[in-house]
Image (cartoon, rainbow, N blue to C red; front, side, top):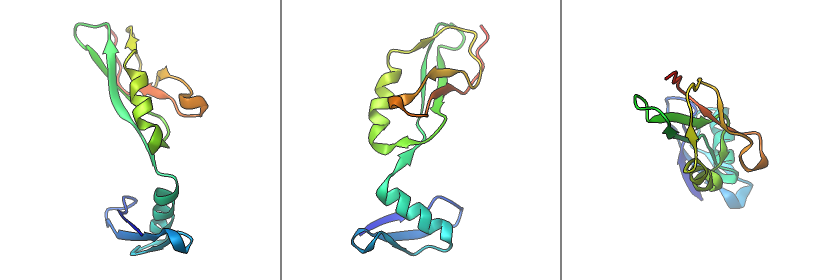
Amino acid sequence: MKEYICIICPRGCHLTVDEENDYAVTGNGCLRGVAYGREEAMHPTRVVTSSVRVRSEKYPRCPVKTDLAIAKSDVAKAMLLLDGVELVPPVHRGDIVIASLFCGEANFVATRDIDE
């Protein structure tokens, strides 16, 4: 059995997921908690946030994030990809910094405008 705290709503239900019983979820206050608990136990994903270097004296770093959640097991590999990135202004919010992470649909995108 695994225990999680549901993050779908502010209630923060304490979930228990029984992996041996077809991922049965208990402790949920709504059906969304069941879906969250099963997904977190079977295929955990995360949105990754970080920053990359920028050729700018005023803004030496630019915040970035994945535009979709990626597998939790890929987070460390995704962070390593950012080490070699250096952006050249202008950078616009939503610009793709690294496309198609691990041959998937997720991209790292800039989350700040840097015009200088």
